[in-house]
Length: 216
Image (cartoon, rainbow, N blue to C red; front, side, top):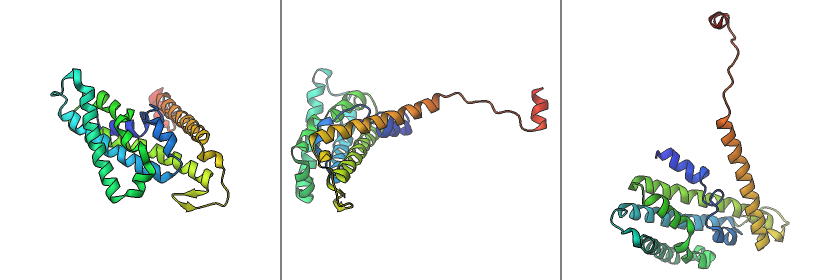
């Protein structure tokens, strides 16, 4: 698979949040702030990329009967690393992510890509898949977080931008509503792009005398 296709799959065609609808727990719980989306997205990208690389390297070594426990062990190792780094250098972000940071171990995105892609593809392709799937996840969370933060708190990345707010958007019901809106918008854009690519190209009428004579 070409690098361009891997990038487009992760960012748009198979966006883990909006297309595959994976990782919904952190998506609903952490999108009250845009910065939470960036923090969780970067953490997932790191774990996803590193675990994809190791699993791809060991794909011919790990017995098929124990592949899932082996994948979880590899993923848990990198989750522990990112937790230690965030607790040491970025404690505020670690605190804002709360229990969802260690729960990256069982995030369906990471385990799903390990099983569906990294275990069947070479290292470079698996690395790119991890990077772009993680970035696609981060982009979706950040946009949803910015939307909910703007309307729910009147701020954007912690900066005050308006004097009023709608408390509904920072509540669980607001998370579900926002998720539904973003999935609907994504589906409309995806269908529009797909239909545009499938539309047959119309033949233009000849505009010069030479073209007319040639067609005659």
